[in-house]
Image (cartoon, rainbow, N blue to C red; front, side):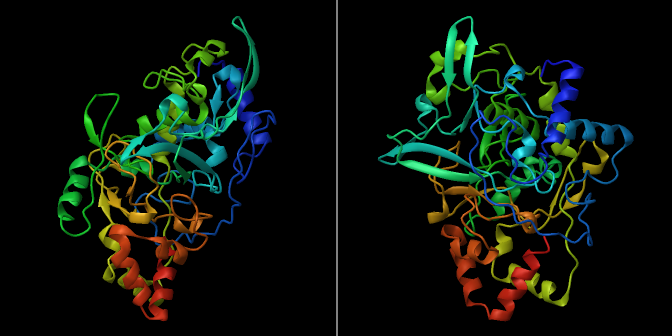
Length: 418
């Protein structure tokens, strides 16, 4: 944002004062309508058997240079900062700080649920953009007085004409710099290898900075290709803050005339803060993996044997990166970052090539630091999440169901080390 250093320091102090790194924290201004989030019940992850680049959960990558460590710290400051209307927050938004949703621990998720909606008629999906879709912004800055007069901004709601409504849990940010550094060719080769097996599909999307068509890998529908674009997208759609790649405000409930009363109509961020948040995510370390035991080794074997690893790919490798700690590194996300037909587990929302039934394979690393599971947080246990798998995952689900109880317990124990 185009703010003074003193203003920035005040925002960071405000973030600390209100403990935004604690799960379930609300914005400090009670007039900023806040949607409820799931109760966080975080588990402790063992810090042995570290992944490539892992240090502690919520900490930076290992082996960063002094300059990179400074960039990470500055990025974390931006991640924790609380935005206000004077910074360009809103006029409709979801939260006033990245840290509010990505908490418990730093960069994780507290189970904050957001809502998407649309309308499907004869198999054709309409995101109802003219009514504020497909993403609901459930906060608003309230009453404002500008040269155009007084106006009251209110939170958006799902319109009555929508016949598709989906909940989505905030995704963790751990290790995303490694994911960003995976070459497109690697993910395309994975998709080709799955033909006539699990049939993973790469969501080919546009990289705004270059105009190139890239393999999407971020978001529940793999609808974003790069971390920098993911950052700018979040600033706009989650906080209502415009930037060079996302210069246009979201029209509240689709009513673009309401933007005449926007108290900060100019571009809110010149790209600096978006870049800082991208730096934080890029250099945030992956989750450390728990220690192996005879039971978890047996669980890993069962995981592979019944077909879970066909989509939850255990190991990927990065390509070239200007950050040495990310360059040509093997890491273990347990995802192919491809779209799969999940049948009844799909959310009905269409984004790019991702139809209503297609969902990105959720990475399993950091599983033990999540309060709930699946895209909508419906599952309170790992086993419940397994049983909810459908579509292309149905075979693996049924094989899990057929395992002896001891093998099921071993597989769950293995997943809880990730």
